[in-house]
Length: 347
Ligand code: NDP
Image (cartoon, rainbow, N blue to C red; front, side, top):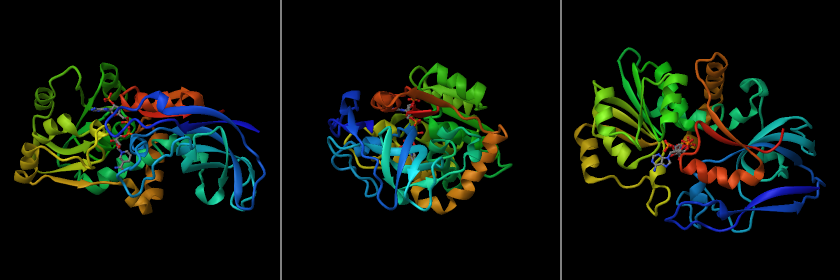
């Protein structure tokens, strides 16, 4: 059968923003003869995520991430349907996910690389398995529970950077549900600010492109900041950390403002910010969701229930067609998405 796939065409360099031309669409002939243990899958949705920027480099800088190879297929989070199976664990029609789904319209995969999921968990919104009821939802929930130290009735103020993105939009809502009295989001456009306040229930939103972040934080966090869910790092995080309370906590989720630069992870902090952390005894431990997967099943059930009951709202930006996945990745890296960036491959 003829299938379309996306391969890595070129690398952006360690110090460069990715461009759509870094990816190339190809048509290949897929022989659907399955060996024992293999399945033929049809791709429904693919995910593009910030960590993929490291996979575009020859050296990812992280031992748990392998680099993508030039002219070889690109892979990441995906959800799809089993078309045919020679693996005992799956039958045609099963919905399956993988962290290593090839950017391909159909693919032959090894059954052991796939996990069967229950569509009822997401009320049929299968793309949620890549976001709110998948790795980004888990990152928000487990990041907060493991590193946030939110205490109900302690009148905590939480700040979220990257607040209109996949992790940030869920993290702010969980902060509210877990008992914060104030949740302030920082993000990159007025449209995003409106969405997180009016649709998601954030107390205040700050547009970091247009507004004076330190001044707006002072206004909107009169009792200082107790918990900071940090998706972006850089100058925004310096401004937040400067207004954090003694004994407060940072959830070091990501540092996307530094991903197009040749710096180690986590990137070094300025001397002043380092001093702020020490003098105010602020915790800032690295958080990697993959280290907490033993807690994933329970956390996914909690996320699913919150979403079904309407207590958490899910935002997505959906782009159609595998030919647009490179553009969608580059757009997400520059803030083109509200909520989770999803690519719809087939019905
Ligand atoms: P998002 O959906 O948040 O998309 C990325 C967003 O980053 C963009 O929409 C953009 O929003 C923002 N952004 C881009 N460049 C900058 C910049 N220079 N300064 C400030 N904001 C910027 O992605 P995810 O939710 O998937 O990921 C968010 C973070 O979480 C990333 O840092 C990622 O690496 C991290 N992560 C960490 C995990 C872990 O285990 N620790 C697991 C999963 C993700 P805007 O318009 O607001 O600028």
